[in-house]
Length: 445
Ligand code: G6P
Ligand code: MN
Image (cartoon, rainbow, N blue to C red; front, side):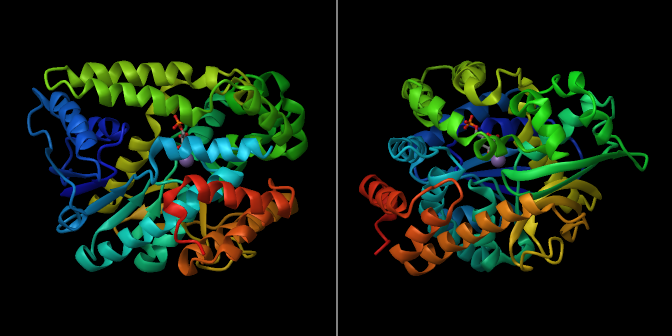
C-alpha cells in the first residue's frame, strides 16, 4: 500500500509517520512518498522520519520528491496537507483582518476566506492531476479550510476525496468522557460544516445522555467547551458547539483579545517552526530530538496563545496532537481493509441536510467501508444553526466562484456576505489588503 503525502515537508508529518509505524495490520502502508515544493523542508522532515524508523522492523519505506506528478503516480492514498503561502501567509491572513477590526483567524471569517481564495486553485490543480494520474486513489484532505477545499476537490474527484478534522472527534470524546461513557461505544449526533457544527445528542445503548450534561452546571464546567462557552449559554442552546463557534458567539471579545495580543497564532508558529528548519541546516544535528522539542513548545504555548478564547481550559495533549493522524489512519484502514467504522468526516451532503444541495460538503458522522464514506441520516439543525450553515456555505460558494473565474466581484461578495464581516466597505478593503500581500491572489481581476 502506497501513501503519498502532499505537504510532505510539513511539521506534522512525523505524527502521521509515527501512527503508521504503530500499524502492524495486514494491508498496512509499506511505502510513503513525501512531496513538497521546498526541498530543504522535505529533507528536514525526511531525517526526522528516518530517526523514527530506526530499529523498527518493516518500517514503511520513505522517499521524497519535489515533482508532483511523480509523487501521485501509483499512489493508493494521497494525504493532502498543504499550506499555500506557508505560515507567513497565515500570519498575514490574521494581521490584515485584525487591522480592519474583524476576526483574523486561520479558517474562520475574513482570514479563512483569504486562505481559501489562495488555496482552492492549488487544490483544484492537485485534484485534476490525481484524476488523471491516480484515478483509483483515495484522497484524504487535511488542507484547511478543510470543508471548502474538500468541496473544491470533489468537483473533480467525486466521493474519492474525503475531508478530515480532529475537532469534532475530540469534542465527541470529551463529551463522552464527562458523561462517563466509552467514546468508542457512544453514538455522537453531530452535524454542520467544518469548524461549524454542533453535538445535539450522545446516545449510549439507545439512550440520549446529553440532557444529563446540559442540566448539570458542575459537569458542564468540567471540560474545555463547557468552560469556553459557559454552562448558561450551552444550556440555553441545548447543544455543545464545536470550539470554533466561539468566534461567532463571542466575536467581539475574541477580536479585542486578538488585537491586544503580542503575536497572532500564525506569527508564533512561523517563528517557532523556522527555528526547527534552521536547526536542520546542520546536517549533523539530531532531527527527531529537535522536532520533539519544537513540538512540545508548540503544545505548551497552545493554551497561553489562546487563553482569551479557550477559557484557560487544559486541553489534553492527546486531543491536541493525537487527533489528525488517528482519524486519518482509522479512515485509511476502514477503506483499505473494509473494516466498517463510523467517523465524523467532510463529505458531500447528498440528502443529509435538506436545506443544502447534494454536492455541498458538510461535516457529519459517516459509515466508512471499502466503498468510501457514507453520511448517516441525522435530525435537521435548529433554525439558528441552519441560518449560520447556509450563510457560510453561500460564502464558500463565492470563494469557489472567484477561484473558478478569477472574479474580484465574487471575492468581494465572499467577504461582504460573511456573518463576521460587518460592512461592504470593510470587505473591499480586506480584498485590497490581502491582494497587496499575497502573490497567490494575483489571479483575481
Ligand atoms: C485544530 C483544527 C485544525 C487547525 C489546528 C490549528 O486541530 O482542527 O483545522 O489547523 O487546530 O492548530 P495550530 O497549532 O496550527 O494553531
Ligand atoms: Mn480542523
